[in-house]
Length: 444
Image (cartoon, rainbow, N blue to C red; front, side, top):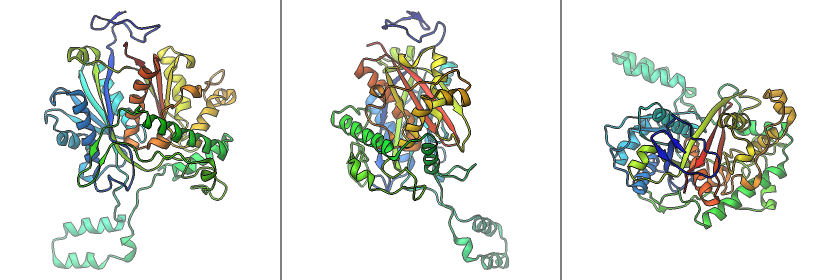
């Protein structure tokens, strides 16, 4: 098939290449090991993890440090000292200071947004090569003084006379010293995501047993993938002042009996979401190299996959907070002209086992499709023998800003390993938002 750039590529079956449309490729993807918060990364900062991922990408690709046009990073909870973590990490990793960098935030799909922003820049002809990634550091999050204390401190900074300063100091009360802690909660509903997951599981009749079974599946598959050396995107990282880390440390296959002993974590005493069937607070970072196909081949790279159609969706943040995959999957398939049966590899973000099972039940419901999505029939469900076969966020970990790149890189690696042609990534995010992308295998 002949298309943009005059390249001739032979593929089996249909390709999503379009005449006159630039082909955009994933050249490489890496990530630091994803670690439980409060473990080996505990004394670092977010840009340290992002820098490590960027250095890992440079090492793996032998990319010249001035060869990219732009760098974009996603993060959710920002460190105030390094608010543009993309720029600080890029400088720390040794990239040319002539390369612009910006940071995006879109909850759990922040690095998805970083990647699709990269795709947009390349498609528009602005850039030929962009590095995208994401980082999250839950071991240390900004904790603020109370608003009253902040106002007093700012006023103290402006005070001219000793009298004014003493007056302000005298106005401080014990209540002013109560800190404001960041919460993993929806601002619009004041409800934690775990509480929403519990309500969603109840609404779709997802039992505690189903959730525990799915969580155990995730950990079991992740352990096998880790043992078999399939998680080749994980780089080795010498943590300053600490150990060398080379693998994720949250993968812990348990037993159904052990999981059944845990009490509900959010809706007590009758909830079904527990610590064992939820993703855990995770530190980690990821990075991917995205290029136009012409540029990648000109530089001597063998791309891993084509990045094709993508969509973002948004719905009610109270009752449908975590249903992003249900809404985004049919939209992206329609854009690509594909059906569910055309997809060889599915990688869905696992925030909670209850969230995954609720999405699968919504996708399998004619009533839900007709009532909420304006469809004639149900979306249809991914076959489990194609679904998250190397584990997922429940077991590998979920650094909010970094997970999107892990999902896309995993699809590329699984397509190669399994001999498939099309993969689909889908994820939910805070605010009732969601994302999906179609990835096509690069011809071997």
